[in-house]
Image (cartoon, rainbow, N blue to C red; front, side, top):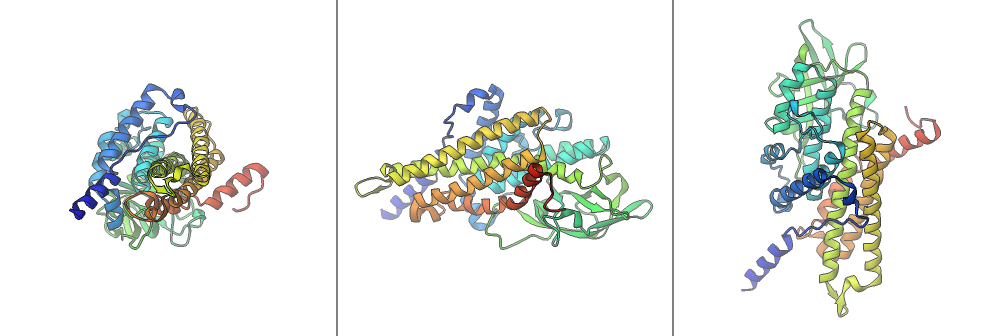
Length: 404
């Protein structure tokens, strides 16, 4: 009898009862299409991610079947034109999609945002018409999974120092080197890889699964993003066909443009993680009785919740304006850095405060708090570390670069 009761209680705790905070009626500023897209992704997350995510994270399991499901709901490359399989949506729609997926889990959002911003975007922006037609529809549908190779074992915040290189062999290129901390790599069918030619100029190449000398070892032992798959890209005399070079743009500015798009998605996604922690904390504060009343009735708990709601609301307004700038083609790298840096830091602080409200229960898988907190420790580092984004802003303010 006791066992059955415990099982029922545990099942009830895991039920997804999420309600999104909107203290400033920001929904009034969204279109009906925006709200419809958000609603459909929220329903998808409640059905396909949140019932299983704690188990996936605990087992460090990447549910590969989610790739096709993401494709079916349009989570891959939503801003890519419909003629190439994308959704043809605006950037606020893209942000809302990332917000809802990361509300479920940062690793799940990483899977989607890498596919859209770091694989499909450069192929669309810098690729040939043949490359677009060959790869984009299959990436959009989830038939293919892609990854983005920029970071190297010895070159993270300084990507211009990369040593991965390719040589012109006449009828093909010969690629050598390695990339590290690559989301999706162990399961990826294609990799957009950034490497230097013989003159030291950075170019993008599409490397396909099955090319001889191309391997993708998986990274094990992660305490963060455990439900996503991470690995390396190793190139040992890989023969890359010349038609796989991205012809539209070269230099470090090309991958940096991709990162701008990805960082924008992260700025929205982080709000999703923060909202999930806040929502759980509000609900728990009303249910947990101490000293004869719900802990939500104590001043310090109300202080924590009030500050959480304030920071989430500020971030929502920040993102809405940034999305408008993106839609107008006016968003700058520094503006994107500000949003990514602020919102991830905000989400991490909210996760920590929410954990305190949950007390000891906050460290268990019965609640999403510790998983979000651990995930955000990766999010605050990847796509530009917290400190690097600070220095990007510093350069914008002073005109003086603190790093080359």
